Length: 320
Image 1 (cartoon, helix red, strand yellow):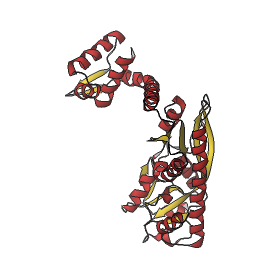
Image 2 (tube, rainbow, N blue to C red):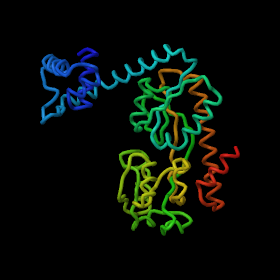
Image 3 (cartoon, one colour):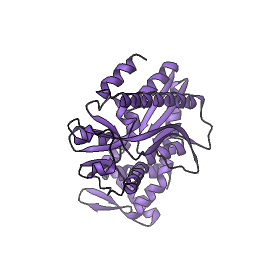
Image 4 (spheres, rainbow, N blue to C red):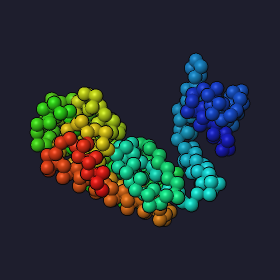
């Protein structure tokens, strides 16, 4: 299979119809259909089964797409580099990060970075953590950021900040009257928590096990900012990291420390095979300062018993 055939195959996999794939690729629908037939003939096995008007990938097709994904990521990185060169940009930094960080800490860090580097082109790509790791490893991103990232042989994890898990709840919740929240306090609560398939969820589940308390979230989420939003909608209480609650979007919620302490590591993710650029290192420095500033502010607020959190954060941030 050549690169064009892989591109057609990938489009059909994404859209599940040759009509939509043809529109995406600026091709005719018959040309896409014929290309898929030709690929299947070359390979000697079917890539799709037809179900009504849609194409359902075969297991062989899914396996082939997984193998081809790094090629597409390299191609995308090359296209981005060519666009930057054509635009004559003085500098560029491509960041990949998870949704919680994209909503909470990264906007402030990006603002400060661009104040120091006004001629630099900056892009932020929000992805699941596994995809952030892929982007850093393949060169699609210059630097990635994630919490409790799993190390890979081809990546370096640079510590940015160490956070703690906190409990957020509505102001009329019984949890709001507590100085801190423990696993037994959550037994009769509707709990929103990270999926146990990721590192944060595993650490929280271990904390419940140490407290001899069953860990049974009512709702599991991939992104912690989604958990906070569900609490606002009245679905229950949530366990999340300290930085997520500093986004300013959840000022109506109460925040309580969670015990036993669950520590979470925020890391910058860099590829080992390439030296980080000065721009990447500069952004990491700015993000580290921004993280520490927010954590100090949150913890000082917690110790002083100030309320509401969002108003306090906004007032103090405006004076800095």
